[in-house]
Amino acid sequence: MVVILALAVLAGGFAYSMKVELKLARNSESSAELDWIGRSGVEYAKWVLGQQMGISSEPFDSLNQKWAGGPGGTGASNTPLQDVSLTDVALGEGKFSVKIVDLERKFNINTADQMILQQGLILMGVDASLFPTVTDSIADWIDKDDNRHLSGAESDYYLALKPSYYAKNGPLDDLSELLLIQGITPNMYWGPRAPSHQNQGRLTKRGGLIPAEEPVYPVGFVDLFTTLSARFVNINTAPSETLQMIPGIDANMAAGIIRHRAGPDGAEGTDDDTPFRSVGELINVPGMTSQAVQFVSQRQIFSVRSVTFEVTVTAEIGAARRDFVAIIRRASVRDLQVLSFYGK
View 1 (cartoon, helix red, strand yellow):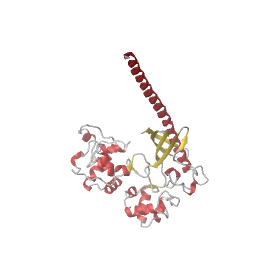
View 2 (cartoon, helix red, strand yellow):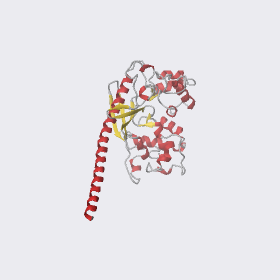
View 3 (cartoon, rainbow, N blue to C red):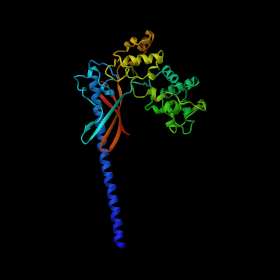
View 4 (tube, rainbow, N blue to C red):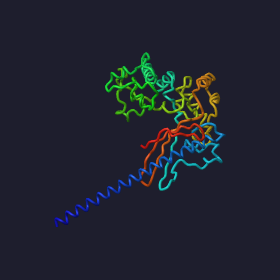
């Protein structure tokens, strides 16, 4: 009986071990297949973006087009995009769904000047006494020298911190680098999402200038800026917050721009949208002054095209599911480069 019991235990252990090994093998196989489905989704997004740029009757990018999840606009008829779907695209034994978001709806933090940065801080509701520290410190972090702006900080300041580090002295590669810069707190960075990121963003309250009870701001740096977009903002996709960062454009003007491009039904991403075909068409927005249009034209702030896109692919095989993210830079109809690709 003892021998039989021992053999039964060994057999049970062996069976359990084999079950675990089989499951691991299946997971490994599914992981590889999901990876290839994810990459296929990125190639699919590249094709959609290339086809969109090739539609001569729509020399702009807007929220009612196929790439943005819209119905396709008037230019999609009789083109390869006419019956295109971004959701549940079958591929082998699996499927994928694609979400494409342009990054030109935000300002590039690396090209934003002091005026744009200050407008952003005003929009966020940051105390005006903190403006010089934040804007000068961002400038010092990005510029190539070690000469400190009046209220900024260079490597000598950061090397005195614990842990210590050097100033970047170069463009930000990732927006989260802002959390390393003097004067910028997680509340400023995350905005309304700050409470869910309370443990993120080390080295806060630098310089002793941050109020003891800092408010949760209605918008944050992550809502207004990116590090990957072109230097132009697409007026067909930019939200109200981004538009209000332009000196001379207040909340009412921003709302007027959005109403104008949304069309008669007032809803963006629908068939009756009327996207801007040129920056000069801003003069047709009620309340928009010729001075404001002249300012944005001279400063070359706006565009009606997007160049950089964040693509999220959800790959599925049965019950297995994984998300992938890629950044695509579109230079022309046939020149679309994948700048990065990673799985979540």
